[in-house]
Image 1: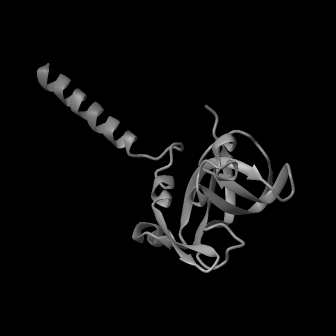
Image 2: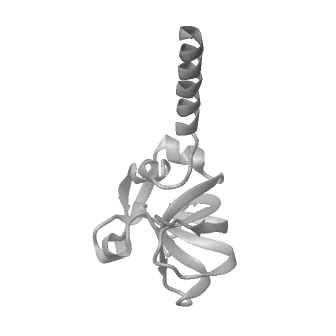
Length: 148
């Protein structure tokens, strides 16, 4: 009886640990890594200096949760900003820095939502074009809204 109980307990503990290691959405483990950035003044602009970890993500497909910040075509589109912070605390409201925003280029247009969303796309690091954000997600796909 004790051996059966112990075996059952051990299986449940191992199963529980395995389930905890599976990523199931918010919070993101990638955003905090993107925050670790420094800048060097070059002319009129601050050039981003990406950490080795961020450089290792360059041109790889990643998933980011965040909040949509529409700006080009209003309530529906393929090009928008994805903020790690809610709109009232995002980069454009003066709270976060440029490392808290990713410029998204979706393959298919989606409707704006104020719920957090998950986006999958190829991460591009931009340290040359000051007219774009420092992080871009290209060939991106909308995975869905995150409902709490």
